[in-house]
Structure formats: C-alpha cells, structure tokens
Image (cartoon, rainbow, N blue to C red):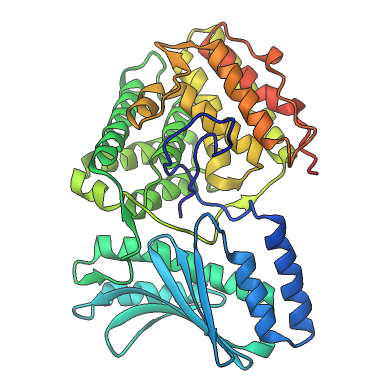
Length: 440
C-alpha cells in the first residue's frame, strides 16, 4: 500500500534527505530493462518456453531498490516470494502449473463475522479466493495451469491476490481479537520518535480543520463547498504524509468513496459524514495508531497511471475556485483547494515522476514544521513567508534530475507569484501547464 521515496531522490546534485515513506506505492516507474523483460516474457509464452517466460516476468516485477521479489530455480521449478506491504506471497511455477498463496492470519476459533466477510469478498474477486486451511490459517490463493497463464493473466492475478492480502490482514486483525498475524516478520517498525511526530501531526491537523469548520467565518450550511475542500484536503494530506496502514487507510478511502458517490445527496450531508469519520480518528488511541506505522516493501501499485493532460484538466476544473476566497480574505479555504487538487492526484493516480517531485515539494513548502521534525534540513517557508531563493533552487534540482528521461522539461519559475501563500499555490499549479513531458 505504500510508496518509498526520498523527496528529492538520491542524485548527486540533490540535498541529502532522510529516507522516509511518503504516499502510495506505484509500480509505474519501471526501468528500460524491466520493460524489455516484459516483452521477452510475452514472446517466450507464445513460443511455449514457459519457464523462461516466468523468469522474465519475475524480472519485470523486481525493483532492485526495493528487493521486493526473490526467486530460485531447482529441477525445473521456480519458487518465488513477492512482498506487498505487510504480506509476503509465496509461489511456485513449472511447465504445468502456477500457484501463489499469502497467509493473512491464524484464527484461535472460528467466528461467523470474518468467515462471512471473506465469503462475500470471494464473490468480488476475479482470480484469487480466500480460504481456510486445516491449520486454521486464513489465506488467499491463486492456482492455474501454465498453458492458460499468460503474463497478462499472472500479473493481474498476483496483483489482486497481493493487494487484497495486504489490505485485509490489517482490517481483520483490527476488528477480530481471535485472529493473530502471520508472515509479517519482514515489516520494519518506525522509530518511536517518528511515530510520535506523525501521531501529533494527525491530531493537530484534524483539530485545526474541525475547529475551522465549527468556528470559522464561513458557515458550514451556507458554504458546504468550502467545508468539503477543507476536510478532503486534510484527508489526502494525512494519507500522503503519514502513509498509514490498516484502519486509517480504509477510513480515508471510505471517506473519498462516500463523498464522490453519485447518490443525489447534497454536499452538506456528505460533509457531515466526513466530519464524523474524522472524529473517529481523533478518538483512536496512540497505541492503535502506532500499530499501523511501519515500513514495508511493495510490488504492485493500486493507483492508475495518468498522463500530464489528465492532471492539467483536473487543475483547470478546480483552481479558479480559489479566486473568491482569495478576494474575500479566506486564506485557509483558498489554500485547501490546491491542497485538494494535489492530494486527490496523489491519492488516486500514478502521476509522471516530475509532477510527483513537484507535489512532494509543495507539501514540504507548506508543512515546514513536520519536515523539520522528521529531519529534513532545508526549510522553504517560515511563518507563512515562502523562501523564494530556496524554492527556486529546489525546482532547479527537480528539473535537472528529471531531464535524462524528460529532456524537454523546463520549469519556468518566472510564472510564480510569491506575494502571498494562496497566490504562490495557484501559480505553482498553473506552472505545470507549460511542461513538456515527452519522454526520451
């Protein structure tokens, strides 16, 4: 479920930064060698050289920086392990069959609650299925004859199995006390200092947002759109900056799903739902939060790849809504709109790498205290004043880092308006519209 990324990468011309988790993992940024392996896997499958097809497929999945896929071959059988968040997928493949399985949890006693839920989940799965082993282990598995297992099929089957396993283990363990975790020894606990910083950030942001909704100058009944921007912004912001697992991730996804449901409910009604869900997060114990703060390796992303045109279209559809709030001195609501735009894109899409870098920098500019507490040395704003020089230097680094893959990329900082935070935020997003992201 998570995306490991240094804010400015590890290029020699970049500032040294802590290696922390931010946002949702995506498998869209693959190397040329990985794409070549995919093409070979397709060719070898058509030629019925199945083992070589599997070898190339696993090479395609392997991210050398993540060490997310391990396999060995013995007597014409390939045994592999694939990491996806808090789960490890075990599998084997030969000329005749392909099998994969992930252990979710072990049950101390059978409970109709989780059993019914998993049966219902099976109706929605296309490739895999949940099952209960003789050892009372909840697993999710996929089996198929090799002759029917093209690289396309095995990719989508493994993705379904892996992402469901990663999602359901946290949810089930949080809800059912008679379950104990399995196969999660590979997760890396975060330092207690980092957990405390993130926990305080969650409570601070929710407290500030709900206080603005309750006591701000704009009535929640008369200005439901403003309230929606405020709460959606904070939901997306927490998702990217905290990279939560389990209950909190599910709650944030549920908020978005409910808000964008085309069910005829007015925005004010949907705002009430978001408000109640954020209150639930406020009431959670520190221990519950800490259980969901850890570092993992991932193989499959859950966000859909999009091009620059899609992002520009989304910006154009929302950005001018800032104007009324800027003109009427409602700065916090005005800033919630670009925050919403950036957060929505990061939450739902696998965006081009230069845009990811720019959106990451945006959060570092507008959340200086959090990043400073986490060990980042560069501070891009102070007391609402944006440091023009340091921001321009950071943008130059982003351009230089992405030039090898996007040779026509030019970040024109002359378009930026530093006169106020809202004006900067608006022109920062409008600047993206001039980019040329034609790949080399």
